[in-house]
Image (cartoon, rainbow, N blue to C red; front, side, top):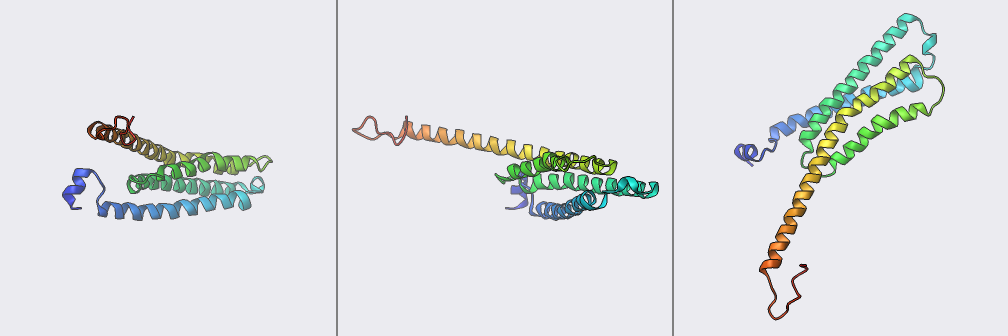
Length: 182
């Protein structure tokens, strides 16, 4: 496909796809590292947060905020890149929706099931996950709606083609045989 055909069809050019792919991979790494940092803090590092001195608590809250912002930024930018990369993929929207649902509902529910009274730092950390799930959820919604519209149009086109075939092809000497037509 040359540049003119890409422009006419609205498809992303190979250069755009390459850039989006590289940014997407960087976002995956940043998202994974920030998520790992937040989860490590909740499970191993913030258990005795209330007993820390005030300066250490403020430093840790700043670190949690920084990791949460990195996770959110990676989720938003990665979601936009995934929209470009997976526009013509049928299942991408459904997979992204499952991942966004796991972030939005699964992580807070997992922490709620741990029991006990969580510290301020743990509550702040857990609150970062549903916010980070909103951008992938929106992109998943767009991809799923696009897939459903494509399927609907394809179904209508196939039905119209079958209808044209049924009306134009008749078997001589047999009234009811119409190649599966009704």
